[in-house]
Length: 251
Image 1 (cartoon, one colour):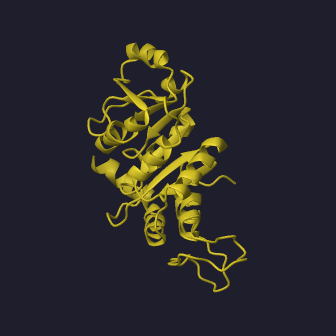
Image 2 (cartoon, one colour):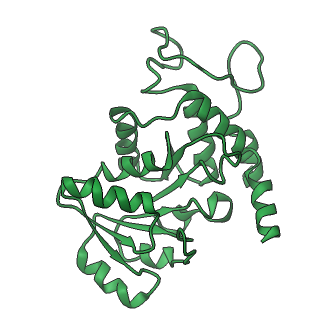
């Protein structure tokens, strides 16, 4: 039986298979695990039950095969762009989150990853997107801060890998992978956590190649969330549907 969004938010990633009978997972505040443990954990930078459980939860909410958690939204952006090659081009919606713009222009430009900015809410600009032959199209919808709405499905049909920063909509209101996007990125710090007490980021995908790249970046660059932050975000996700319904009603 297919479960609804709220049921997935409440139950996925919240079970605990240990021997104590605890109905909720504890916080695994450990840097190192004993060799030969049943779940294969060795070092928290490479994997910790708390952020692996969070990844299960958020993959379910995005209707994705895979989700990879990070220490912040900016860490999630870093993981994606670090997976590109020198000489690659990103075509980005011109109304872009300021920290993403700063990373593109002041960090990754030094490594010859170039970004072209277009008003992608206007279809007449799409031929310029095609001409750039981007390695990645970077969208926000709604955008930050102007709240522009983009045609995600139409842009995805142009045939280039598409990332959507889904922070402002959350997976409750919009699931970009269902619209043809390759990657759905969110700062979990905002709506998903919902309590202003934990930084975090997530990238969801159905593409196993992209998933492998993101897990590599998570480990190699030290971008993983801490166990307590992951636990807080998992707790916050349980009430995402209720909070988003009230946000929408109040608006």
